Length: 100
Image (cartoon, rainbow, N blue to C red; front, side, top):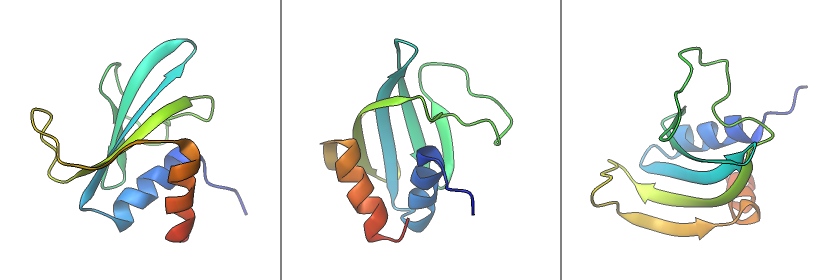
């Protein structure tokens, strides 16, 4: 069985929790990025996102700095935070808690 990447697990998390949006802050190749994940889809807020859903927006080499859980619908002018500045290990606990 192929192990799902962290990006896929985060997308699956938002499928199981459609009332949440994840905002993932990190960097790849020394470039900052912010990834928004909602209902199974990922999109970069700072760089172009490929149209092909098989190309990961959050590759395995992405270094996660923090993850925010935000209530849906997401309003960038007035986000309703559930939890802010989660570490990768905090998020991995939430993933395992729902079977991912």
